[in-house]
Amino acid sequence: PSPLSQRLKKFWIRRSLRIFPLYYIYLTVFVVICLFTAFPPGYFRDLPYLYSYTFNLTRISNSWHESPVYTHFWSLCVEEQFYLFFPFVVFLLSRPSLRRLLVVVLVAGPLFRWSFGNYLAQHGKTTFEVFDVIYWFPLSHLDAFFTGMAIPLLGLKDRIKRPDWLFVLGCILALSAGMANYLFESHGHSLPTSMGYNFGDVNSYQHVWYY
View 1 (cartoon, rainbow, N blue to C red):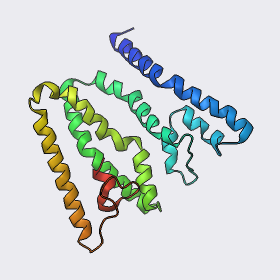
View 2: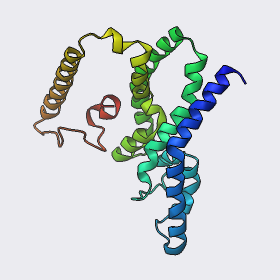
View 3: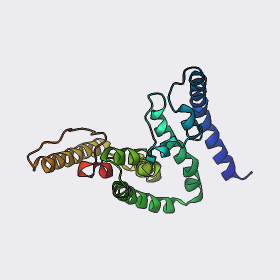
View 4: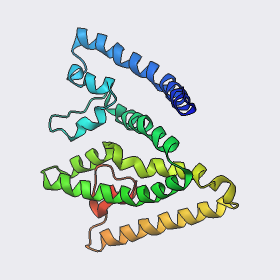
């Protein structure tokens, strides 16, 4: 086998051993529980999506329902979908090409969430559904993953000599953006309902920028 295939195989084996055993044991335990108690409701309908790490994509369906047992697995699905395809990108593109792709993704990420949100709203989704579908969708998080990739790709660990000052600048920018949003919302004589992570809200295009 080629060095590329060996590296890909090694990466996926390590990733699988880290996540898969406990994940599938958990799912199997609830198969037994559901056989005897019918809890959680709808488990066998969702099980194929859970086994294939595609459960996050079911949120767009009108028949979707929340479960205290496995709803939280949407984030694992996003991670596994990313790590299934991302190694090909890293190994097949040169470093300059990766840098160009990084810029494209950082720009395209918010644009995708904005356009996808408009699409969902036009097709009858409620405000909370728009938020949730976008939140669960794998492409919505690409710019976050690529931001993490920027650290080794651009050598930021070695190039940034004063990370404390960068941290202070980030805090100032975040505070300024928050205050601007606060003043914008309160301009109409109605204060915002949350000063933090307002889950389920798409006011002020939060689903676009607050990722």
